Amino acid sequence: MNIYQMLEQAIISDDITAKEILTAQCLEYCSQNEVSACQNFIPVRFEKPSYVDKCTIVSPKHLPHRKDFETPEGLATLIHAIAHIEFSAIDLALDAVYRYPDMSMEYKLDWLEVASDEIRHFKMLDALLEDLGFKYGDFPVHSGLFDAAQNTADNILDRMAIVPRYFEASGLDVSPQIIKKLENKCKIPAVAKLIEMLHIIYKEEIEHVFRGDKWFKYLCRQEKKSETVYFEILKKYNLMDKHRPHVNVEARKEAGFACNEILKLGAKECR
Image (cartoon, rainbow, N blue to C red; front, side, top):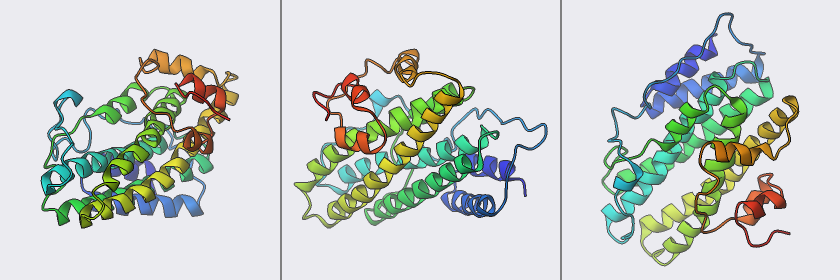
């Protein structure tokens, strides 16, 4: 069984069912067999995201505003934006296995399990979108996570720093704020469902960031680099000075961040 060929098919597909089946097959196989890089295997550099034919891709500044959650369309724009993050995260988790074949089986299983979680998250949100009369692809999206994957394709340490430890960790900062805003509208059945989903996603994303943290630290040891290289990497990708209105201290600590890192990211205190 060539899991790299299957992973490539899963990554380029815009069909969530195909992604789910292929991911489950890879996860089952890797759980029972040792997998090494195929001889002469060279990962493909994907030129476009898997959702390019499904979604209209725009710059972040052209995305619709998500303020009115009381109308089905207003709520759907928020759900769609979160669903898009989850869809993108599926591809990034699969790509973490596909692109770095020399990593251990523990590493492969970690990211295949993360991909499986992200598929489940997307399907929950997509079903709620459908309940509101919409579907994935009905609103424009940006390609920020795909771009991050492209930019870090040749450097696994950068990938672990930028994708799980920066972008996914930033989601831990934002999620509680979204939930808090939605709680004022929790009498609306669709909003109540979304809040329940976001609590599930938030809890599991802490584990995803923790896995990224684990492999980031492992790679630092392998490359004999200090973990402070994290901030050098953020500067390299012009991410260090991004505005962070709220840093979720407890979630980041649970995900592996040290207090000195959390403070440097902008938290006022960390104990």
